[in-house]
Structure formats: structure tokens, C-alpha cells
Length: 224
Length: 224
DNA sequence: ACCTGAACACCGTTCAAGT
DNA sequence: ACCTGAACACCGTTCAAGT
Image (tube, rainbow over all chains, first blue to last red; front, side, top):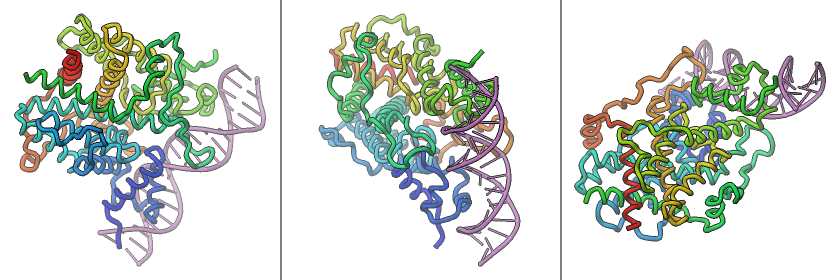
């Protein structure tokens, strides 16, 4: 009953969750679709275009994804600060929802309907709260930069600094080593860093909210 | 006179500037070094490890790179706000100094001497201004997230949304299309976005400084 | 210690030909 | 319109063998 473009994108996203971006290969994808190698190129111009469509589908998640359990209840807050915080949490949630989501979006995003819709929503949301367009755009750009940069580091840590992703040797299973924990540094050369390492594990949700609070407080200060 | 590891890394960085990350191939590298394919693996465990070393070398640029001509003179400012702004500008300068610098660092960074040194410097700098370690760490994390996210988008625009990077067809020369200018959107569906597109081109240096100012102002507000 | 030469197991993409 | 089958031009990595 004839494969469609959206089936290809959906299957590619499922495959992404299973194997990660480095192992997302056109061959694995066509195998999963039960189809021959070349059939892919009837539905998609190139792998790059496919990745672009996948990235757009990931940011589509901002419209459905909840914030990632912040502790405090965002979204219930009034004013532009609470609303943009909610928006940022939803963007993070969307990126976090898929393996290598941030890397996919940051490197391959081809602005499609979902992306443009999300940007428009963010802009509209801030304008409705009385911000000038230029201010809204610049602030929105700053927020998305922060979110993408943050989740990029977050997911990189989860993959084990993205090392260990060798090509074809060894066993085929999980090959990431120490998830998240960096090797301790020499306290003599890096005193502050070592001390920080020795202290609390730093909850990522909390760190994210804290950085976001810096941004919104900064805009608030400029507005007053 | 026997190639050394640092020669390999240096040559790889030069090659990166010439062809970009997608075309940085071990074969092109060994050709440039005037050596056979397999020789590379005497000096380096894998391509991943090489990319990690390259990324570390790029962030080493924070110690030498000047801020990217902001208009206002940073670094001359006193207080932690001016100093962290200067640090952020130097990090952006280091990422911007090499083609695909942000993508390289965000995806492949293997914390080496340069990276650890930069982090330690940032931490020390803020502690010296009276910040608590936890505050310094969280703020530093927020700033680096912002910088990496920002430059990632900046360099993606320069490569033409990273599309057009096909494998082996067509002419071998430059294949990026419209550098930086996105196609105009439908003003009916995306009114705010369209209006913003119609307005000023938005100087990246200025946008970067503005977002950074939000962050520092936010921390300042929390401290008082 | 450092490199060659040749192999191995992969890739993305194209394109005639089928239905 | 949609897919097959087979080819093409690439990849990263390994490893005996040379010097």
C-alpha cells in the first residue's frame, strides 16, 4: 500500500531513538522499511533532506511536550517571564524526547512548518505581553541559543562525550562507557574545577531553570 | 623526520578550514600529510579521537582570541560582568576562528588541557569577584551554553543551513547557495515572523552582546 | 619507532529496468 | 507512481610486512 514520505520520516525517527545519530544509516532505514536501498530516493532527495525533515518533526514537539518536571510549576505563572520560561522548557522537552535531538536540530534543521510555527508562536507570545518586535526577536534568539547549547551538552554527557562511537569493530551492542561522570581532574592544576567536581551532582533540571532565570531577569531589568 | 601527533592535529585543522567538517576525511588528511592511509592510526586511535583533539585545540583559542569587534570596548570594563562578557566574546572568537568550529566543539569535544584550562580560568575569574563556587559554576554553564548555541546558529547560516553538502555528485567547488538569507515566509500564516524578516538585518555582533547582557544583568539582579 | 600496501566491511547515491 | 537490482565512487579501520 505504497510508502509515503511521512512514513519514512517516522521510521527514521524511531531508528534514531534505537541506534543514535551516528548509526542512523540509509541501509538500516530501508531494511526497517522492508524495502530496497534505492527506494528511499523516490521519497526523499537526499539523506540531508531527510535529516532536515526529522529535525523539523522534533521541534514540532514544542507544541505537545510538557516542561521536564521542574519542581516549581511553570506555565501557571503569569506574565511574559513565566510564559517564555514555559516555552523554553517545552523546547528542551522536545529536544530531550529523542536521542541526539539537540545535535540533530542544531546541525540539520531545515525550517519547515513546525519550526516556523514554533518561532511565530514564541514571537506572538512575547509581543502580546507588550514587548517590541526587535526586543522579542533578540530575546527569543538568546533563549533558543541557550536551550540548544544546554541540551547539546546534556545529551553529549549522556552519550559519553560522544566518544566510543567507533565504526564496525567489536560487539554491536551498547558501547558507551561512563554515562555522565567525568574523570576527576588534578586539584593542583585545576583547583576550582576539582572543588566543584567534589561537590553536588548538580541536577540538570535545576541548572537549566537557573540559567533561564538569569535570562528572563536580565530582560526584566532592562525593561524597568 | 617523522610526523608527530601535533602535526596531524594541525594539518587536520588547516584541512577543516579549507573543506569544512563534512568533507574532512582521513584520506584527504593523509594525502595532505604525504603519507599512506593507514599511517594515521599510528598517531591517533581513531577519527573520533582526532576530532576530540581538534576541538580541544579550538577552545585553546580562548586564551589568544580577541573579542569579535563589538563596537564597545569590552575587557576594559571592571567587575565580573565585564570580565565574563570578555570571556564569552573570546570563546565566540575562538569558535568563529575556524570553519564549523562550534559544531566541532559541541559534538566532539574531548576535554583536554586547553578545555580544562579555560574552564578553570572562567571559574577562577568569577570566584575572584566574590561569587560563590556553585553560582560561578551554574552561571558559567549558562554562558557557555548560550555562546555555543549562538555560534552554532551563526555558522549554520553561513554554510547555508548545512544543506547542499551532498556527497560526490556535481562539481567539486563551492556548493553553498544563499549565504545567510532565508526565503521570505507567508505573512498570512506567520505575521510576526514576516514583519521581523522585513526589518533590519540584525548585526550578529550586536545580537550576541545583547543576549549576553541579559545573562549578566540577570545574575546582577539576583546578587543584589 | 614509524610507515607501506593491500585488504575488509562498510557508506550514500544513481539509474536502467520492471510492475 | 513506486520499487528492484545492480552498479559506482566513496568511506574508516586493520594488519602483516617492510625499514
